[in-house]
Length: 352
Image 1 (tube, rainbow, N blue to C red):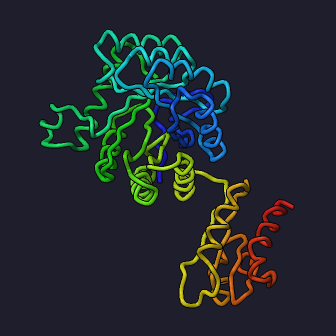
Image 2 (cartoon, rainbow, N blue to C red; image 1 turned 180 degrees about the vertical axis):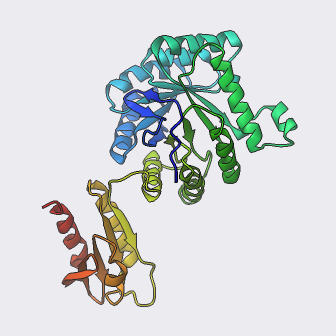
Image 3 (cartoon, rainbow, N blue to C red; image 1 turned 120 degrees about the vertical axis):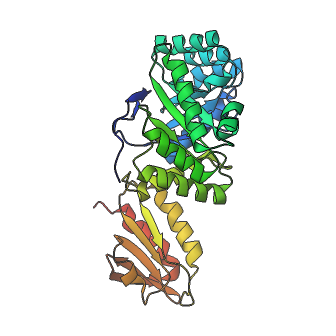
């Protein structure tokens, strides 16, 4: 894997992206932004989950005004999501948005777009230019005989030029599609010609199951090629789930260290414990530990220790009992109901 380093560095609040900086995790609130307490509460939960940039919908002037109070009570950069009304973009920036997301094609005429760009230039706020396959211009659909990766890229680059024309290049580019392979191809094409950081995601990917699969496949292929500077896993579900998946994707690709990795064996006829339930409990338990280690949950005391030898620590179940293992070596035997608490005790004192 290589890391695309020849992009412009863009600063979003206190987070730098592009130019070889670490890939940042982004999510979006699903509260009404006008409801400051509910929005702040959700953002704080996202922060705890590991979110590093958060985006809020700004469909009204009340929502734009709320950004000022929201920003006072959170600790990560705040992005305003704008559609159609250029006045909302200006108001969002005046109320402290660290970045705005617009589609220059639907923000209004050239004069209105220039007003938005001038305000961004005045305040030094980056603009994310977003293009989705679902909103591809009719002319490009006709030119390429349908919605294609080439059409998406051409549309995005045209939107970039619309802003560059006003002398502004503090930009982030986003091209998305719900078609995984189309999205991959579009990113491969734009990465060759775009000097700006790319925000990557598979849009409208679906529920927790289908969305996680599509996002993991698509983002995995794109990121493995060194493409992408911020990512969002778009799920029909709680935003915190997006962050959990994003962290796991980055860790699996070697793009992020830290956090406990849980590995567990598939169930088989030798399994004599509730392996599925135990593995899920372990995965939930380890979320709160800032350790860079691998934990194994195995269902068999016969093969478990050997199969888990690459893990730093693990547990393996038997008939009413189980083993605590470290680097494949048996440390002690305990009752089945004590497996989880014994593992937790080890993690509590790991650095000792």
